[in-house]
Amino acid sequence: MSWNAIDWKALERMRVAFLQGTSGATDYWQSENDLASYDATFAQRIGWKWDYVLHELTRRGWSPPRGELLDWGCGSGIASRAFLDHFGPSSISKLQLWDRSSLAMQFAAKRAREKYPGLEASAGLGGFAVSSDQSESAGLRPGRHRAILPDAPGRRPALRPRRCSSATC
Figure 1 (cartoon, rainbow, N blue to C red):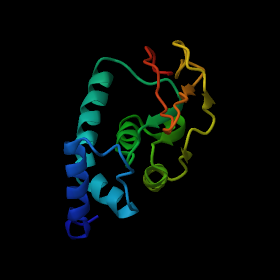
Figure 2 (cartoon, rainbow, N blue to C red):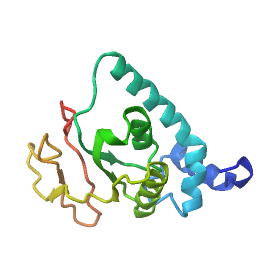
Figure 3 (tube, rainbow, N blue to C red):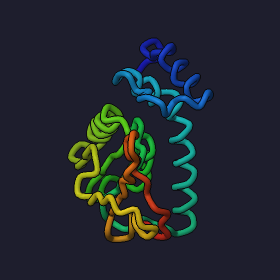
């Protein structure tokens, strides 16, 4: 995307919503152009941070086990693309993208497939099982890949992953 094509007004709208803490009230991605503009600008900072972390993990001798990669809260997909840039698309069997916005999931999947032809990239939770179990032990677990959907009258349930201590969460 060229600098001339960036929707600066959309970026300002999103920036104001983030700074005012109102960005979660509605879907702030109003168009694919919002996502493309964000991806070319603000998301680059996220990518740089991931580049540093992934480099540091490699320096310390860590590498991911082969399996599915779930990009939780994917937005434009910059984090999963940074992961794939670093470890290569052969390091995963499939890319799953999750975001509260279906537009963001579709955008991130499209960008990943464009950058890595042949990559299996899916929007949504796909094979990840969903449970309404609200017990303390529920959540994304090593080898089980569960997510919980808390029941809350009058509001949309939020998917919340449990903290995990292994790379296979």
